[in-house]
Image (tube, rainbow, N blue to C red; front, top):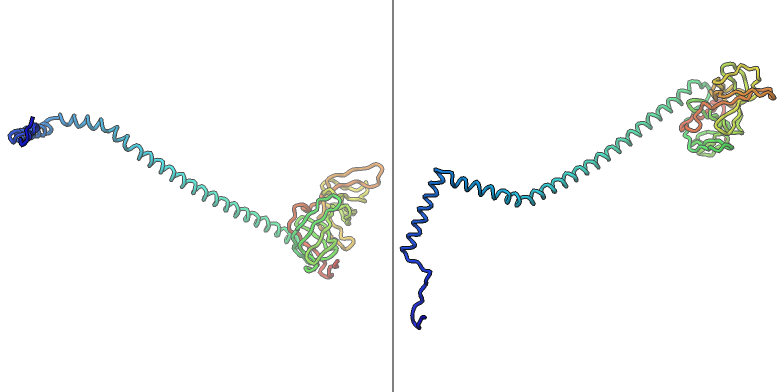
Length: 287
């Protein structure tokens, strides 16, 4: 027990001689370890063991970073692929649209060439190209509407054809449009002849995309496949234009004439561009 005024004694304190001894021991151990590391494999083996032990720890420590880099790279690649895919789809759509335009242009050129090719048969007719804007498929009223009218000098009884043959004739017109009664309409009739034999008859519409050839006697040499053309009688339809092709012949016992069914050669349902004919020496009659 300390009395007042007595100095405290530090039991953990060392003397200068002990400190010097500890330094010498540490120095000698360091020299020994350096020599052992230089001349032997003791510390190398220890280092190898330490590295082997620390390797999984280092990998575990870097795993989150590797996962982050992988996810970031994958998402970046996916975004780039999506963007490139979207771009390719857009380019494909544009190419398809251009191909459609190119195909439509080729078809349009073919139609116009077909139409203009028919003008070689015309001598005194004035020709106009018109576009079909409406088609009536009603069996009782078959007609088309054109985008040409009185302002274009299109009038009554003018004949309308396509690149294959006669389609019909104009029955009324407005300043900008006109209506064409098709040869398949039940109210339409026209004088025709069989091209192969020259046999004349009357072609009448049936209202069902077909026509019938009447007043052909039973002793006529008519055959399925014969082409029917306009005869030019009546001064409405010019002579020599294809109209229909015979598809069926019925010999009715009680009738003096053959029942002949034919199919129009003109593309009544598909035609988009047509020719309007009128005699150049006559002005068309305006409705």
